[in-house]
Length: 196
Image 1 (cartoon, rainbow, N blue to C red):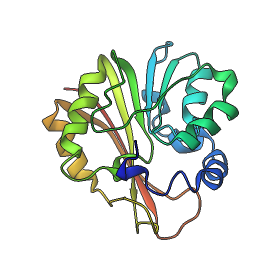
Image 2: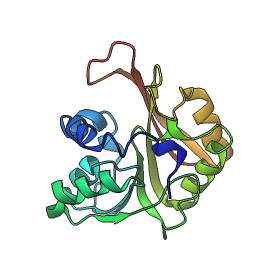
Image 3: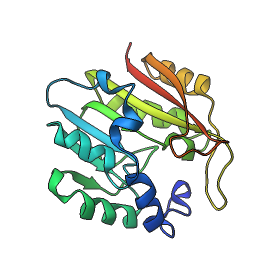
């Protein structure tokens, strides 16, 4: 099944894999790494791409489930990070129907902007349902123009915070940063949520 939010990713998977892997997980998640569980826990990486972040977290001792709806990116992830012991699922927001149980951390790096406005409240409720009692949701928002051929939105951070509050989550971190790939018209917000 093809999802609107994955439009353009299959055709560009090889180039995107090189781009994703050119950055380290520590670079992307640096300011929120202290919010991750200290002890090994269950981590869900939604929209995992090539598994860069999933692999880094697995190597820290976490049991990681990586959700990626684009088969070509999953294939790159399995090839590049076969040593990490990641469980891969073909699934997507807003419903994540293949995902079971609860998680100590739920990660969404460059994912939220693919959801339609009416999907975002439902997706946030689903994330809240998947969160363990002391768990954390870590989410990055991309701001800037939509690349040609993509299904993407510039989602305001305040809207995302409001959806989280409606789903029973409180904001525990908010930061803004420049694009790590040097694109001058792109910038990012990182948000972290925990149970209220």
